[in-house]
Length: 163
Image 1 (cartoon, rainbow, N blue to C red):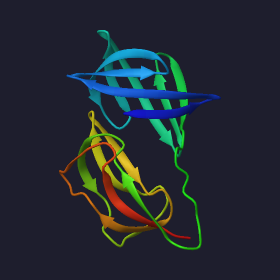
Image 2: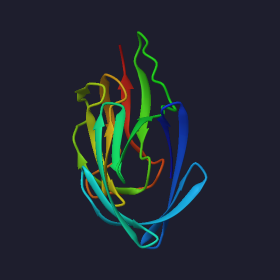
Image 3: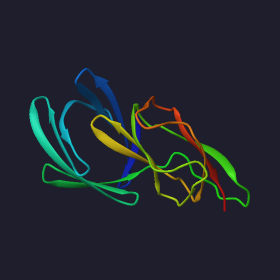
């Protein structure tokens, strides 16, 4: 899995690969072997090379904050796809950003939703990931159910974006 985050003026690339019970995490060329002991919505207990750490995480819209090792880091998720608003509806599919299990489906086909509204929640690596509406629109087709295992890039739902 690969993520890109803007931190100040610097674009950071984070790659995560599972290696048995651990993860190999590469942050802009620096590699770490990470074992996750506990993860909640706002904390992460983990070890790197048998050194134990705890991070506190929070989000405020596009801003993500990580308090770790007496430092607070601010990240803004780098957008790779921009949604264009037009007068006509545009169909788009939302996909899983990493493999995991669908734990909640918060909408039904035909539901009208607002930008940022959570639609599906996937559990992966002991963390919950919310798949949110990229814009105001309507859920056209649900392609997953609760309990289903999904792969990275798998379509979760079809979404109709309109003005």
